[in-house]
Length: 194
Image (cartoon, rainbow, N blue to C red; front, side, top):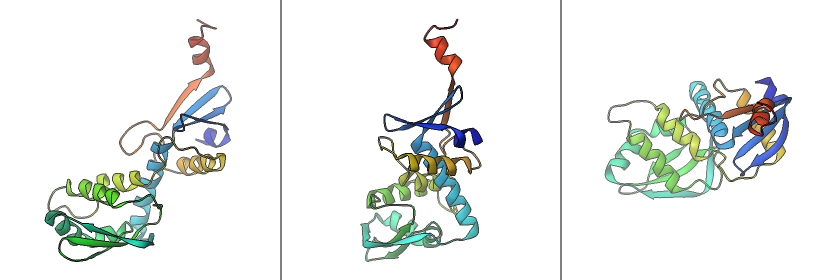
């Protein structure tokens, strides 16, 4: 994937797809899918190394849960801690989140946590450890979204991180990250060649 790092950054289209050109090839990169892949692989690496990567929040999140959700959270506090959440019981079926993974920004919300919890609860009773499906949701929640303008420096950083992943071609859900079109395809579509 060295060709991505050597490519000229043309910009973005629809504030969702990054356009690069290298020679006669146009690369179209889904910025959300790329960032999601980067975050997922980073989470997997951090879990193996048991590296701490949480950040304290200025205003802790206080979340009222259903009894089954509360039981799930309390039973998996260590798993949540491993991925960066510091959670405590805070009354009947209520939790307080004092720290979140360091790659989340101020846009992280209680609703995001509930969505992560919902994905986790789908794993079924008796499952230990953190499933890839749960990590997909954790990775997705803070990833760069569609409709976000990126500076060239952000694009360059994203490309460097993407090329360092084990699987830079598909997001965690199996969708493609990179599409390529060569000059010949353009010429065919514009009927310059047959």
